[in-house]
Length: 211
Image (cartoon, rainbow, N blue to C red):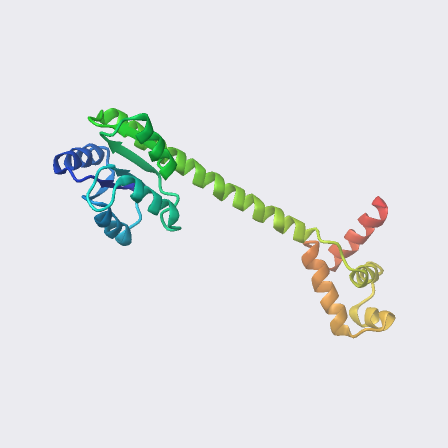
């Protein structure tokens, strides 16, 4: 699936040059010539990465970057400044505004492509790691639920099952309803991931042996 990039610059020739450079690498490229136009593009589709100039009419790149970082929908999109403002103070201001990389004009196409590819690759690895951690967390949570301890009433029911009593006999022995016994058995099966009464009997036996 093609990665979608948004390029923002008020210089038509440079905007075209960047667009052609990126399209040659099979990126889908959206363009805008101002911050306001950029937000119109963002309302239509969220890009995977943004490349922006700093000097632009209506809204400069610093303001644009800060607004992008403050909006939940765009806060995590990587931002690259491509600009003629190459002073140290300019770079610091850019990084403080939330940009990820800073490239000065005139730009080297290979450098731009390398930075774009590396940034998108890192973003993809980050997303995969987040997904893995979320999956692991869910698995751990399920494992914890599966290994949840039985209540006293459930344990007494499990022991009765292990002794070969049926639900009616267990209900009479414990002075509860048959429905309550069925309820306890369903919980035991779910908590210990057992499939039948034989599994419950084995579980009780293993617990008594290990203790």
